[in-house]
Image (tube, rainbow, N blue to C red):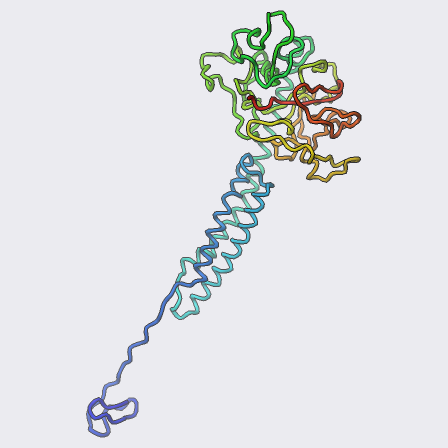
Length: 394
């Protein structure tokens, strides 16, 4: 070290200058300033964790409420893939960020960001593993409730038929024709309700749901039984919803002015020569979830050209065949009520007699695919189930 008085050089640690004899003091150099920065890797891990959380929410919604977004839809799958990639990146970057901070000698900070990136994905993965189990159970439960509703409706139909000469519910007068909604659903009498010229006149106009409503009017069923929980925004019918709070359910003739918003089910074409009686084969399909080839208030009808049964001679694949299933259950199948009042979940629409498609009418000898219905369509014969629901009332 150098002497501050004479400038002579001395050995390090000397107590006294060898030239001038002045006492020396050890100098303590100030430490160099350390540049401390937040780890960019830690910040990137936190950003990935945030992105994974954002994409996780639609997936979570899909599992918790399939009526909004079905877990097997393209959107749900895309968000699931994005969640997986962002979660994996967040975890890897979070661990790398912690390692960088630990070995930086104090030059790097950002523990909070790194920990967030490394730990948050663990909770998201746990959610992805656990939520589908509970959501799947919820979906199965709702499907079972739908089946139970149809079974109850079937039993009420047989009781109704016992009081009406073995005929299942048919609204309107003889030879009534199908319309989307009644002329007057809250009329004081059936003449005005169905647009008849007099009490003994035939014809008239009646919706499909008006025939089912007879089970509410005369069979004592609750309108809630006609709503499937998986059927979009279909809600239980209440007169109060249409400013008819003072009217009793038994004094009305249909599920309100927009019956398709309050009835989830299709019914065998009740108007025409092939309406149902209890003498027909017990395996005949009577009712089911909405027809996929008819618009509902919330979903457009499917394109029939995309439907191809997965059996000879059509030789479609599973995805092609699912196009013919009810939209209500996301193409997985449909709950079907048969004439003997039992209901079951059928994975294919051609579940009627002799592989009859319950949602189409026969096209010559083609019973499996058939032809989609429209106003005026009639079954080919008494063995041809043709389940229809009212389209959106215009």
